[in-house]
Length: 283
Image (cartoon, rainbow, N blue to C red; front, top):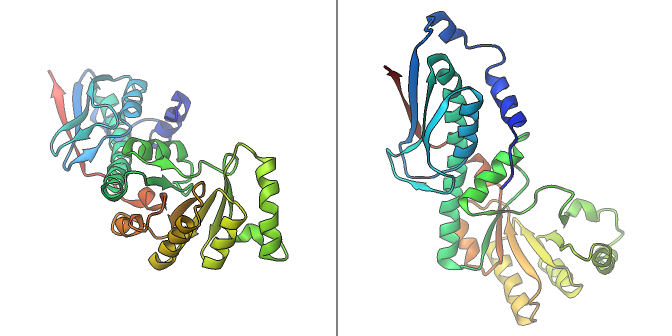
């Protein structure tokens, strides 16, 4: 799991609380104590409660209870509860709620999608692209991990993936194919992944020994044809991925083609979990 530092959490706090809370300042509630709990209005997979707890502590409140990430909660169950000075509780209130709403929704949708995939093919994996929220990669990756997926790419430095745009530099497809072996020699511990949406190109890529072919926005018929060709010619070490336009509503159709993995960006724009809060004044 990615470690989000206290410095990063402090920066998140500063976005919402650059100076002081003007609303509670007007109330002049010195010496008042409050307790707040965050609960869910729907069944969810929990994510980012550990970070929420650290935000609460950074704002000088005490965490009374929280459910660990990856836990499953039913409607009306509590994710986290904390108490402290009335002003401090209000400072943490929305920061924590919004963090949990986004993270739990991503984790919940991820888990539902993983479940749909495994119902058909336990060996097929759900993989997420690097199209996460700008400035929020750690948060997004943690959320999909808590839901049971794996990152397809964490960034440009740790994976090799040739898009169509990378191939424009070559005079022909044949010239690119002939480079594949040298790519493998230069990066012997890495997988050579190439994106394609043409059956003839897919066949050639298999023949020249790429490690992974990502079929982008391919029809179900094209993907089935590619899987059939791979199996017919016993390219056992080559993995096929389906990508482009895949979400929770159509994922099972793509899994049924026999691919090894599903690549999606949809988990990063699935909305927010329906969470509620209850604040009480401590006596």
